[in-house]
Length: 473
Image (cartoon, rainbow, N blue to C red):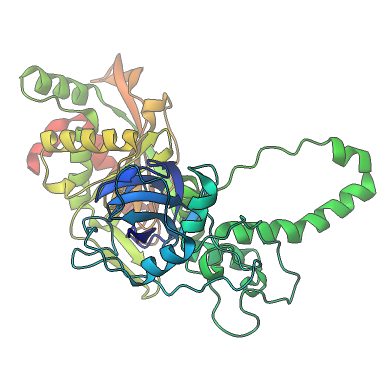
């Protein structure tokens, strides 16, 4: 008799508490091997392929593509020990009993946080449905021979439950006036707090009544719709019916993470920006000479990174962060350089570790590796965290200047515009030179304008005369 084991969304690390299903890599009825990727999910930091620690036949999937699930929610069930080509999964009772009590040898721990090689993943206590009104995640209704497969899922109902409607004020359906509120996502808590929504009045559609972001958004929409509709009806009933609804794009996943981080930066950091034009002709000539000498090609971004690292060694105030709770400025010992990269998914900032100790060749290789990973959507959360200073080359978009937003919790960001021929006074005569605009946005709490100006001036001097770096090498 095959044992049906439930694989839940594992802890993805870096404090992430939820993920969105982007693409299923297996169907119901497929045979999966141990550690085979079964689903591609998007977190607030990266795209991740999630491997299943069990080997066997997939009997059910939970969640359509585009569904957001919290950590610990069921992803799929696997019949372990079932022969290939099995068409009749076990009954619901058999599946539930097996999932609760079976300890199978068909598992692996070489996956994400929460799964160890010493034994199967720990199972959370399951509350069995007592009535059709209790909401549980249901298997993907479009996959496989649905009726028997749905019955095999340990926590599935025979009929998919409709999304719960928001409860009236004071109903307390998420726990009443007493007891803990079933929310594990800090983003969900923040959204409710910022909008003045009492989470005790929000019914949760997640496992065991867990409140998801969609539940909060649904409650906010229901609360605000009557207030918004009343004035419109009173003024022009016909106009409201004819007005276009517009496209609503949820701020979630990477886009939501970017929005939250930029908003926090603007809210917490008193930033200021200074800029300067620099003659980059000599820097471009030096790069051309280095590449003409043979060996691996050196990128312009790598040379700018070298310049930033040396500038931060001279002005360590800008390689720091502010501990608001302790009211302290924390100067950081190493330079972990982030760089802005535009991808089909949106803007990401991969981080080059220990940029201050790397050569131009090593920096070029690491920039290339991280850029390719960003394009493929394979950056890990570790690749996207821990930066101490950010370099933003927005010149690739054909613009000359910008006022960057500091990448919280860092203290500064250097922006680099396009390098183009411009009239320039060189050695007392008007000439056509390769000119670039450099802009520095900095946290005014960590330093004053003199320090920021000194940093930017040093960077400009190195761009104009790369030999300046020879004094510090």
